[in-house]
Image 1 (cartoon, helix red, strand yellow):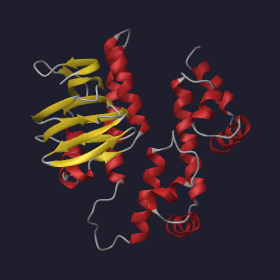
Image 2: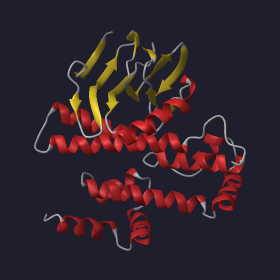
Image 3: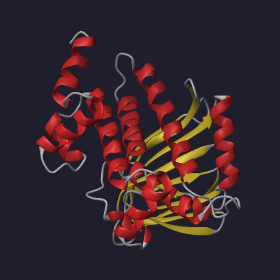
Length: 291
């Protein structure tokens, strides 16, 4: 394996012990157009491959899956695994390999392993997971005060989002009592949840499902008693609150990140959801934290 930029923290011999996982490997690889991660057998670990740029293929148990920027590929215990970079658009990705320590999370991940074991069901999308893994890489590269506590929180969040993403992603076979309308609504909610930082408008749902927006809107309202617009706005407001809590972006940057057309429209939507403007919310938060 050769790459022109490679950060690799390897702990297979002595895994790092965190509250919910044992960390085996985490890092970042910027591939050349000839890079091949040769076929290897996973042990009893899970691994996330987060494509941050370019394209390539992941071959698992003989099944080839094409991956591109934004894709996250979940590798299961005892997979036979290989990664190849695209010859014209070199692959860049972050990786995170771990064993489950917490029994509750282990039960959930084992169920995902059962329900989604087929290699053609492994790709999902979640900007939150991408950001968290990038944060963990940076923290391990330059440890600081409370790094252990921060990483405990980061790894717990990654597992929670991972479990949620696969629970919302419909399996190929459904119980007889689940209607086609309900399955489609699950898909719509999952798309919004996992693209909340990158969605420009709800019309993206049409491309993702091959249905007209009018049809999707009417179906969602009839099935869930909530409009797609209200669901989307609620999720954007929830994401905004998380970013405000993180306190890394300005209010204007958060509005831009979440695709609001103006700062006014962002403030209005946030206030409708939480009863106060984003600026006042952050001011109170800082005051409560003694800043």
